[in-house]
Amino acid sequence: MFEYENNYSQSISSFIGWAHDRLHKEIKQNKEIENQYGTSEIFKDQIKLPNNLSFEEKLEYVYEVDRLRDKFLHLSKAEVCSLAGLYLGTYYKWKKQALNAGLYNKTKI
Image (cartoon, rainbow, N blue to C red; front, side):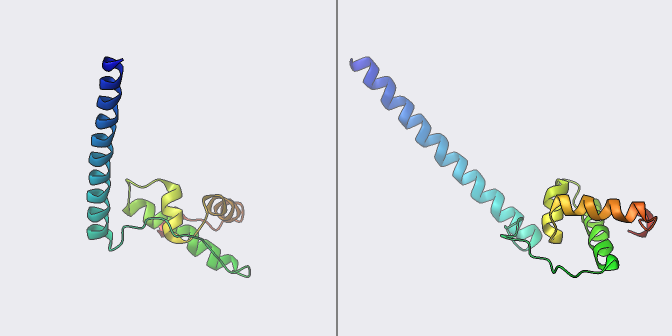
């Protein structure tokens, strides 16, 4: 019984040490991100776009996502869309509409 209690205590202690190290690492990463980008918050809480955007305004959002994607290669497309204030599905929907209309030009970025 004593050996079981000793192993249990060691595993709890080990977990506490791991959690402490992980939290310390997370805090350090957040500070680095904040220093680099001015904020440690990558995602906005909620994206709210007006319902009456013109096709040109939608196309500008698509181009903005593409510009950000080229600038921040380490971020996923979903993270870049969030930075631009757009959902990933909306980005692809609007990009497809622009491609079908022949108005999307990757070189415009």
